Image (tube, rainbow, N blue to C red):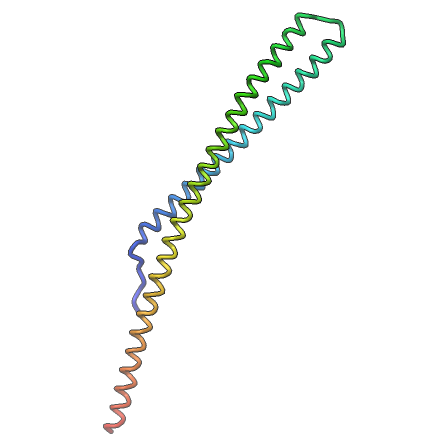
Length: 149
C-alpha cells in the first residue's frame, strides 16, 4: 500500500513552530501586563498610605516640614502613577498585538491542516479507485478463467 506524504509538510511544520513562538510571545506579554498592573496597584496603595499619613499630620501637632514632605511624596506618587498607567496601556497594546499575531498564525496553521486533510482525502480516493480497479480485474480474470475451464 502506498504511503501518504504531504508535499507541503515542511511549511506546516514551520507554521507549528511559528504558532509556538506566538503562544510564547503572547504568554510573555500577558505576564508583563500582569506585572505592570501589580506595580500600578502597589503605587496606588502607597499613595493612599501617604494620603492617610497626610490626614494624620494635619490632625496632630502641625509640623509644616513633615506636611510639605508628605505633599511632595503624594505628588511624586501621582506622577509615578501616571507613568505606570502609560506603561499598563503599552503592555495592553503589546498583549493585543501578540493576541492578533497568535490568531493570525493559528489561522494560517489551520488553513494548512485543512489543505493537508484535503490532500489526504484525495489520496484515499485514488487508493480506493486503484483498489476497486484491481478487484474488478481480479474478478474479471477469475470469471474469464472459470469460463475457459
